Length: 176
Image (tube, rainbow, N blue to C red; front, side, top):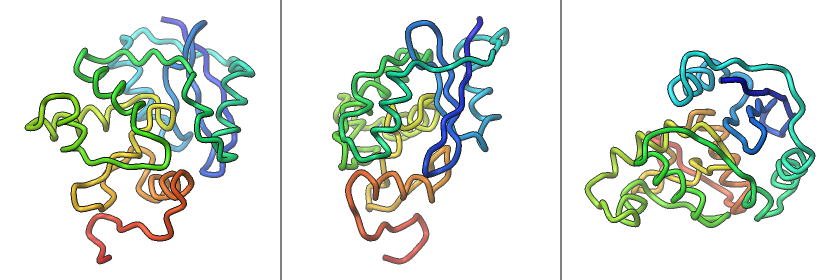
């Protein structure tokens, strides 16, 4: 499978965007490239070839608008994630979490009609290949603490603050 890769600057570091002719296939921070490559191989096969390319102006503009604070900037971007049917259900549900809000793994599982599947939802959340556009950062622990994020907890906290204007966030293991 042949895909293209571009880089875009962001306030959180350089973003890697992987795309085909019709959609984003992956979006990850440059310093997490090995994770992105692993997910691409897992979802699209070991024969994935990434070639240099230039992402469309629509994607470039949407990402810039998101970081400029435009709440709906990423909503219309097409993604092609691969993954299992369950993972795609979780990722679709993530895109329905409103900008500026968070939810817990348990609430997300319940919204999917599977209230006892919070761990499975967490695993699918953590395997999301299209960070930020599929906003896995909006899922937090049931007690309001930040829990895992492929880009790192400081970035997750920044993204949530950026979207919601929160002054303080508790990281897992830290006192409020």
